[in-house]
Image (cartoon, rainbow, N blue to C red; front, side):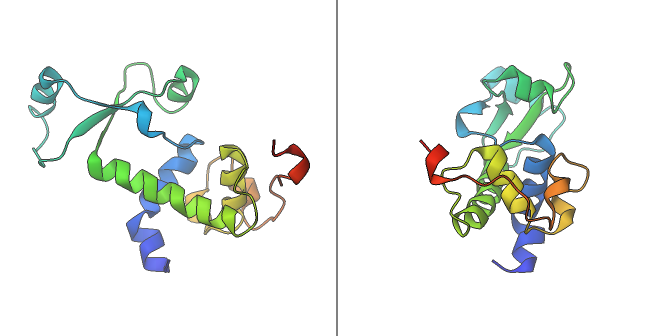
Length: 142
């Protein structure tokens, strides 16, 4: 991965993951109904992609990122970017033996090595360049 890919490829999605503070899961994206598509395209250009509503199974996660009246709408390419952004986090953690860590621990670990533009203003900012992220030991991996 080079710096250009990080900043302009999956970088914006990676920054969003840090702002949200958790990994968006595939099952939390629900494709719009025909009626929702119709209403959506009254204001948006048709890109030919499927469009999804982001509705996490854990309502606490959703309320932490949007107000009650907001709805997050994403396309297939947006979801792909989230996957690529999360893969960056996974790659940093795999190099440090943290494959079995929780999502929070993985975000903290990767934050220690990523440029601060991704974590600035998030709860993971404190881990930037600190190398004091939570470490999973073999004893508590079960």
